[in-house]
Amino acid sequence: MNAPIGIIGGSGLYRMEGLSLDRTELVQTPFGAPSGPVHLGQLDGAPVAFLARHGEGHRFTPSEVNYRANLWALKSLGVERLISVSAVGSLQARHKPGELRLVGQFIDKTRQRKDTFFGEGLVAHVSFAEPVCAHATAALLKAGQSLSIPIEDGVTYVCMEGPAFSTRAESRLHQSWGADLIGMTQVTEARLAREAELCYACIALVTDYDAWREEEEGVDAASVLEVMHANVDKAQRLLRKVVPQLSCSPRSCACGEALKAALFTAPEAVTEDARKRLDLLVAKYGYGGR
Ligand SMILES: CSC[C@H]1O[C@H](OP(=O)(O)O)[C@H](O)[C@@H]1O
Ligand SMILES: Nc1ncnc2[nH]cnc12
Image (cartoon, rainbow, N blue to C red; front, side, top):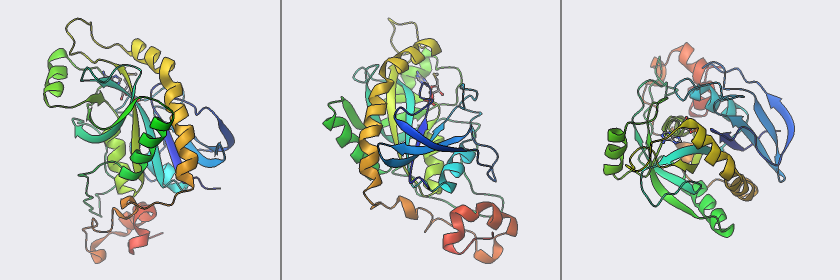
């Protein structure tokens, strides 16, 4: 059975609590291997596909994660809506460690990522002004409120390359931009989700105050994981509330048509190679080549 809802777990979320496992799939994609097997099963009766972003045992840095293969694998298993969980640093005092936030905007500071499926024979330019699915994000907000979990939506996430954390000067610069959170993974996933016509929503779990607070020493990975472990149940509860709701509400947003006005290459100029490689994404627009 296909899974219309996908969950990507980040640092500290390597398995989905409550998932009754039906099978695991190690998907091969035109973009290489995903971070690991996709776990398919039921979450409180709703079919779900779960993937650990950094691989089992957390083996890939944010720059090494094969985001294209991850998104491709999930799409090929029928995922239409993707909810991501990400550990983040706070750039503003009101976002406190242990709290959940829903991302609305990104600032992209990444430098060495494959962050598009396109190129090499087929050009596409998707709209990205609104980088997350408003419908899925609103469902998460409502679910959080109904569970009395303090939550705020519409926050801005700076995505840095890493893997080292920011210097104090960088942290203060990001803060002066008015950004709310910092992490190393989400903008890349969101771009690819848009190109794959998936709804994308990001649950950010605040784990630290990054490096801008004079009175603190700065971030370290061990304390990020400690805070994540102490609070990950909030993200899991939120997922268990929202997934069954989303799975019985049909998509009413434009995410599923993101490529409609984006494909730029004249059909007769698209190479056979590109048609074959991108069949899963573009066959519906008459560019397929299986
Ligand atoms: C372990 S701290 C840094 C690490 O945590 C975040 O990962 P994810 O977004 O996958 O939860 C951050 O982006 C870094 O990759
Ligand atoms: N302060 C921070 N900077 C970048 N990524 C993070 N992930 C968790 N905390 C972070």
